[in-house]
Length: 250
Image (cartoon, rainbow, N blue to C red):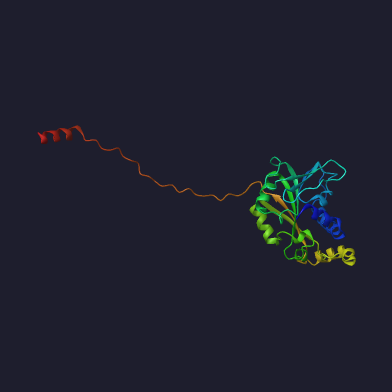
């Protein structure tokens, strides 16, 4: 999706409610980020406000195919346009990474996560907001969560483990249907509480927290050695044998 479409969605009432519900799930896992270096990737600006005033530094990276908007408005810019597979950061540069509208929109999510692994510190944490393939929000393209590739929990787990992350905690959000009606918007929190209490599988998004694997187990391979017998030097005829041969020729 274009960055203008994303901005317009979050300026609508439905987008405002969706942001509040997802922020609730993020805050439950990261109560604060004081002294941390926080990176948002994709279109994270509606959610980075949770940490901007308390963390050490907070920046937003937006993929070149999507576009970028100035953020925050009225302050020095903290958002920039980047190549998502080659981020302009050194290794282990950030403590926390927030992925929003990133994995489902990426042409190569595995490569993207490997780049995130590179810039994340050894004790770093990742939170990814990923559309649920069983959710109602992925059935319509009226919201950003209906675009790109949705994931099941098993697919997310496999993707994270392939890219050297370990899932640490799971959550869901957006149990309410994506309807602009006033009644649905007013009762959004009730939908969330009922859906979470009943563990309903039809939430709009997964909220997964993962940690970086610093040490990876490498399967040991037993080297197969081939025993080569020691080579003996070529036998040179002795002097006695040489004299006998000369006498016989004469």
